[in-house]
Length: 120
Image (cartoon, rainbow, N blue to C red):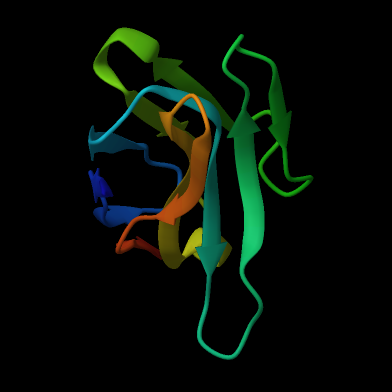
C-alpha cells in the first residue's frame, strides 16, 4: 500500500507565498508522474501542475509564472512553491502520484488534501 501525505497549506494574504509538500511512503519501487490538483466546492478537480520522473513539467494556465513544481526522487517527495497568491487560488490542493509497487504493479494514488486560503 502507498500513502501520500500533503503538508504546508494554510492561510495567507494575497500576494504572499506558500510551499506545499507531498511525501509518498509505503510499498514503492518507483514513481512515475506526480501532480498537484485543486478543487473548490461544487467545481471539478483541475490540474495545477505535473512533473514526470525526469523532471519535465506542465502547468495549468491560471498558475503559469506564479507556481513552481519540483520533486526529490531520493525522498519520494514533491513540492509546489506558490508565489503571488490570489484569492481565487483558495481551494483544497491534492497530490497525485503514479506509483510502481513492483516491476509489474502500478497504482494511481491521492493524498487527503490540504486547504489553501488566500485572503484579499
